[in-house]
Length: 451
Image (tube, rainbow, N blue to C red; front, side, top):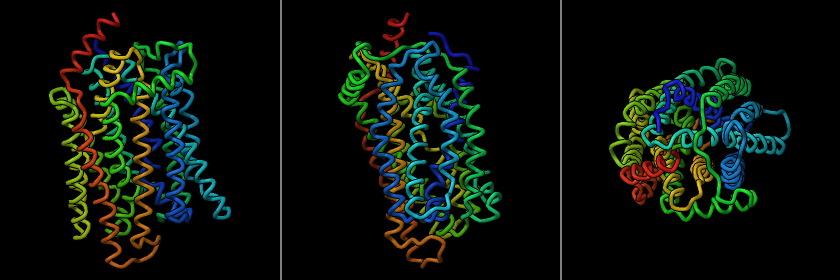
C-alpha cells in the first residue's frame, strides 16, 4: 500500500482542530460554569453528568455500529462529519447559555443541552477517529496520521489554553462568574470548528471497507455481532479499561482543575500560563512519539506514560501546598510532554481492529473505536462528577473564602485522585498482549487481502 500524501494527512488533522474547539471549553470549564454561573449544587452536577454518560454507554457503540455499516458514495464516516459539525456547534453554544428560569428548570436545561452536545460530539468525533483506520492499513502510516493529528491538536490547544480564560474575562467584564463570558467564548470556538471538520472530511479518502459478513441481516444483528466479537477480544477489553482508567484521571483533573487555580492557588490568571505550557508539552510529545511507538511495544509506552502522569500529579499537590506558581507551570509542561496515552490508544486500537478482523471476518472498527471513545466520555463524567462531589464533601463552597484545611483537602482530591486512576491504567495496559511484531505480521496479511 502506498504512503498517504502529506496534504491528506494535514487535512485529516483538521478534524482534531475542530474537536478541540468544540469540546475543550466543556471539558475544562463546564463544571465551574455550572457552580459559579448557573448556581447548581455539586450533587446536581454529578447527577447530570452520570445520566449523560449512562446514555453514552448506549449511544456511542450504537453509533459506531451504524457508521461502520453505512454505505454511501462518500464513504462510511465522512457524511457524519459533514452534516454533524453544524449541529455540534449549535449545541456547544446552547450548553453555555444560562437561562433566567427557576433552579429546577435550569437543571433540566443543563442536562438536555449537555446530553445533546455529547450525542453530536459522538457522531462527529468517532467518525473522525475511525477515518484513520479506513484511510490505510499500514501501521506506520496510521502512527504518522495520528501524530500529525496530535501536532495540530497540540497547536490549537496552546491557542485555546492561552485565550480561553482571557476571553471569558474580557466578555464577562473581568469576572470568572459571568455567563456572557462563557457563552461568547463558546460561540467563537463553535464558529471556528465547523470549517475545520469540513476540511477533514474533504481531505480524507476511505479505501478500507467494513461491516459484518451478513450486512443484510439488519442493523440490530450487525450491532450484536460487532459487540460480541469486540468483547470476546481480550486485547480490546484491556485497552478499553486502560483508557477508561487513564481518562478518568485526565478528565477528572481537567473537570475540576479550575478550582485548583481559583481557590487553592488563588490565581485564576495562572490557568492560561499553565495550560499553554501543558499544551506546548503535548505538542512536543507528538514529534517524538512516533519514534517510540514504532520501536517499543505500544502497551509499554502506555504504562510509562501513566506512571509519569501520576508522578506529575503528586508534584502538583506539593507545589500547590507551597504556592510555587512557577513550578506549577514547569510541571504542567512535563505533564503534557509525557501524556502519550491517546496516541497509544489510536495505534493499539487500529492494530486490535485489524487483528480482530483477520480472526473473525468482521471489521468492527466503528464499535471498537466507539467503545474507546466511550471510555473518554465515561472518564470525563466519572472524573468530573465524582470530583465535584468529593470537593463538596471536603468543604468546598463556591465564591467563598475557605479555611486552609479545606483548601488542602481540595488540593488532595484534585491531584491524588487522578494519580490513583493513572496507576490503575498502567496495570490494564500491562495486560494487553498485542505487540508491534504481531501488528506487522497482520499488516502484511491485510496488504495481500486488499490487493
